[in-house]
Length: 108
Image (tube, rainbow, N blue to C red; front, side, top):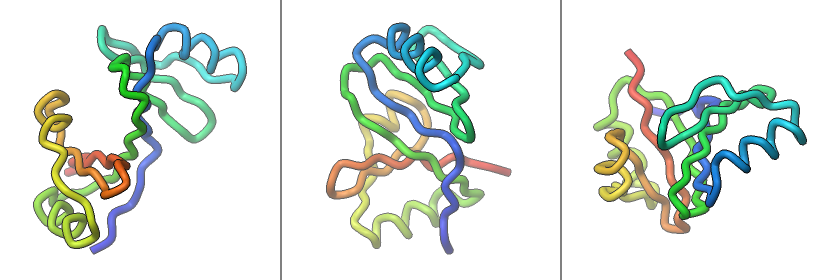
């Protein structure tokens, strides 16, 4: 099993409205969706999710139709379940030994 990256990247920022404004002006990005706790930008092939959580973390996203198998694969490759982010966001996140997060995006 291999996990394909999708085009979604979540970025923790201090001020999501300012960052969205900066990205829209500098990179021809556009706001395509937003909720109280995130702003989605489309910038070229990427969908960037700006999350105002103060972490300044970046999380990549992969598509899987079998999150348990994906979790086992990542655990065998120096990833662990990121329980805090998984609980807070409501989607499964794994964290690599260097702190890189990967969201396991369930696709049917």
